[in-house]
Length: 270
Ligand SMILES: [Zn+2]
Image 1 (cartoon, protein in one colour):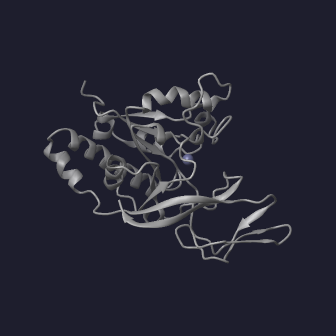
Image 2: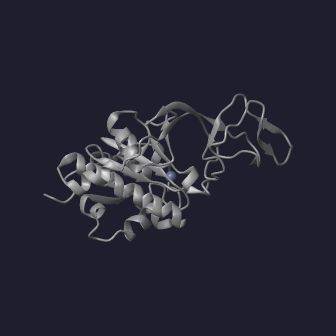
Image 3: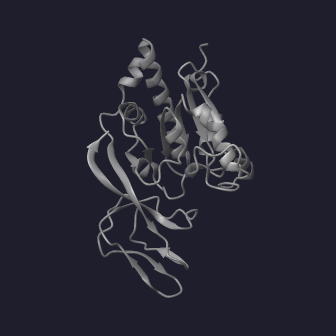
């Protein structure tokens, strides 16, 4: 079978309100290489229908799920696992914390191996992030090989264009690895020479109460030990950094228990 012989799966709306991946897929012409060689899945169909993050639990935290669970996402994860297991998976997310995708977009990986690195180089994001914090329950952790794209807001044209290009390049590169198509080989030769690799090693926990993130905190810009991270609107109490770290996905209001992730540079390129 020619169609999808490389077993590439593109997932959108793993978080139901993150519609970016669905938009990108729908905008691709039916004759495009991506449509010819990959298939598309809505990660969380019920949440997507309601445009909410999830129904019972965060799907991207609970893999491999449980087929006997009464929680919808546990059930859905278990349903997806057999499909993902042998596939190369591109999981397209969206985030309100990114204003400028050209500067702030990132590819997230949960394993650091040669195949995964090849996906990152093909996608060519400004930065790559190795998730070392509670990554076992993530969707891509249950794929043969996987990459998640966090490029920006669902309705942001620049984010959509960048994601589409990244997906096209990944698919072209996978095709070129598998057969001698000159055009594919040429496209994949356009791979990035290097993508700086960061690693997430912790989170900043949100204390109880109403807090606002300090205006001085910007994603990808190092917060130094002693700097203010957030302030309580009621008490005026201030949360300070215990050490230097690079804030990631700070400002996402869907996180109720954390402000965001802490990363550090690995001093390595993918
Ligand atoms: Zn997401």
